[in-house]
Length: 178
Image (cartoon, rainbow, N blue to C red):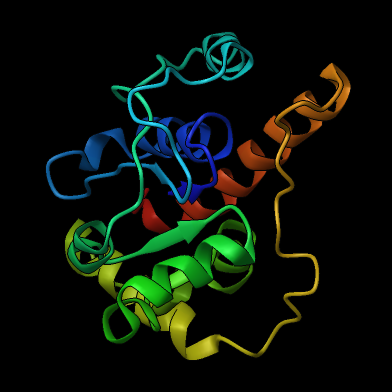
């Protein structure tokens, strides 16, 4: 999961998706980073509070900057906005081109039926990513960005967090076999 500061959008998406895919924690490893993150900053208090309000423990050890090594070791890179997807692709064009999406783009493209009958979590995950990549270009990505809530009024921050939670639900659903 990637955003700018690794304070709001990416840590929220990481923690929510980690919670939704808890039964697969041994094979699906999640992390987050920021394209301009300052190392070891805690997630925003609004994010921690939002997570706790949904019964999810805040996760992660503090902000970190996105690196080429992170992109190259990832089977899927999800950016909060197009700029984050593009940053991942710039760091590792060959590896990231077919594996990098915005949160919303991936949610629009991933389909449960792509992995019909695939029970192994790692194989299911890889199949879903390939299916979404093959479908790229079939939907408009005009509104694919989740806007940065940093400095926004509380209502806009909350709306952003709810939007991410909804997107994570759409991403998690096909990954789960039950």
